Amino acid sequence: MAKKTITVEQYRSAIRRPEIQTKTLIGLGLNKLNRRRVLEDTPAVRGMIARVPHLVRIVDETGKA
Image 1 (cartoon, rainbow, N blue to C red):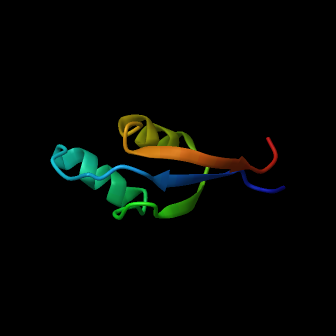
Image 2: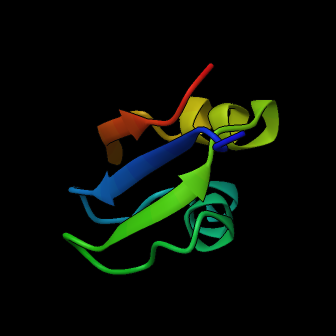
């Protein structure tokens, strides 16, 4: 069974943002503009993305349900 994945890209800077948002980006593996990461689609990852939707965008969602 293939795991569901999600590709996330940071498109805005974390400069002048609260420290918790910067740490959330680092937790997602993002810390520079235009960097992309392919992550496992879990509730934890979705929650992290939901905390910084103004800094990241979902590029692709793949895998079987």
